[in-house]
Length: 355
Ligand SMILES: Cc1ncc(C[n+]2csc(CCOP(=O)(O)OP(=O)(O)O)c2C)c(N)n1
Ligand SMILES: [Mg+2]
Image (cartoon, rainbow, N blue to C red; front, side):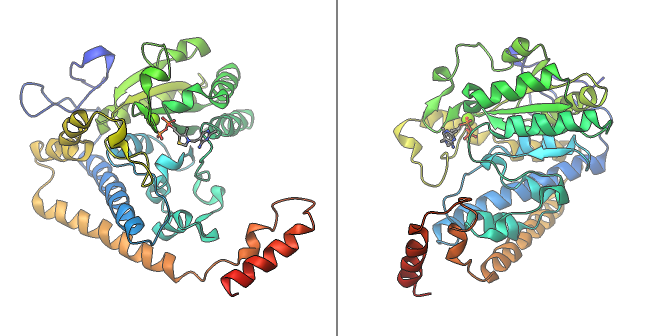
């Protein structure tokens, strides 16, 4: 069994604070695996920080920032095998990068360019889902299909605290539980749904409590602790593969960045809390842990950061080199039986755009 350190209110934690709270460890995670987790977190962090800059430079559109969510995303990802499917929301837009999806593809998605869509079966990563919680029944269906076919693969679906108030979440969780689908329901509880706080979202004491209503296990982890997230997800994946059905994981964190580049949280958020949480953000926590173990030094950190920055530089260059999409795509395939006005509208659009 892994050794975990004491944590308040059943929040599983592995990484200590380098002081009074000692470090734990996750059984079976060797040095290379620990460093692979770090590399993934750095890639995600770099992706996120560069994307905010690209947005400000007008090179991508509105962007959903995930700064501080990297431990949840990388920790969950590394507990999966390549054949397992991932269903991301807009908050996990870059998760495909960890499966080899080119950065240019995801950046094209944020540019609203058709090059931003991929064949999900090429990476076992579903399209980025913007309608809240609708990816949950998709994932439940895919996982159930895997079970019916006798395949070992499972599915992991990411969604937020706000998504747990949606009908689609309930329907997906319920059908997955009843059918014992190999599904991991991964809730990123960052305590905000745009400006709606968790307290206005639910009367449940914890979101993990909801699992009892579906008759499935619910785990709570510190979402800023990549090792705790990894370990909890690994358990959930093992349960899914053993035919024991879904697990709900509540990863608790606090959103310290705006909901998206179009949001100004100073109107509603507790800025002192934001400062506190930023000082204890997940990448720094993990980096300090690896340094305490003697696995990481300045040179390696610099090398990993440089590699990630280069991936992003090449990614945005490739995305910008894509020829502009034809505006006709806005109309094509929109309706089986398009109204006559479409023809006129498209002609008008082409005239305005000078195309
Ligand atoms: C079905 C639907 N309703 C409303 C929205 C508008 N909307 C976009 S993000 C968001 C908040 C979601 O919060 P949460 O599930 O906690 O995810 P987070 O953004 O915090 O990752 C809402 C309501 C939407 N995208 N889809
Ligand atoms: Mg949220």
